[in-house]
Length: 356
Image (cartoon, rainbow, N blue to C red; front, side, top):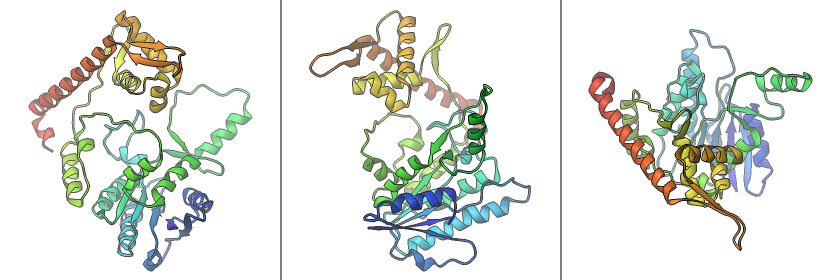
């Protein structure tokens, strides 16, 4: 059995996590911990996992609030982590936020770098960096940056919008997209982290039992293997040296764009799984949208890229034609060389920015 302590007693996420883990009494002993005022570090003795939810959020920021956010969201998180580590805790889960990206619009991808622009976001980003320095083979740190959390009893704007949508016969069409995550989905993932702590975040993903796809990327921050504090320090220095960098959105178009990184990923996953449906599922893309992208690509090229076989003893399957594989290889080489050229030109024309 794993004893789990959840800081931030009474919070929406903390309360739901405690209730979720308590449904498995044979595996977890979960309790909430209030960090207001004095708290006892010895409470972590015999604890296998600490989930740090406590923090300052959901308030209008004022010009003089920077020190307050730093004290609650960074200093307190580090104090709790140090105390937990000293008492032999193996797994520390830190709830950060998407606010570390500082974006008010646009999509966050694996290439998006943290650039916080609020006191809240800055304090969370600084906490992440400080916690990383505490990690070692005996103390794993997992950082989560969830989007807006919704579910029964949630706070904020979501319940107001939900009530409004259910009461109005018509709802205005608003061009506004925002990522959301259901509270039970979040709890199920955190349960994996709290299970044993072995292998940190990578271990939790492995224990989920879902297929994992290895994708070749050219981002040094992703390719860098960081297993020790020294490795992470090197990675952090690399990251800080590349905060300003060229950003390319590469695609091929006639009147419409018909080939980009998204379509290339769809082709690569189809080739790997022999199934357009599975490829779409892994990309969280609707089946119809996937085929629409393939059909547009084939129309513009004037040739088949994906061939589908129906029926048979093993059921239907989809696979790339030889032309499709040639196209995918060419596109990957094309984008790789363009990015390399962009890096060289950026260093040539913006040497001062490139070295900061």
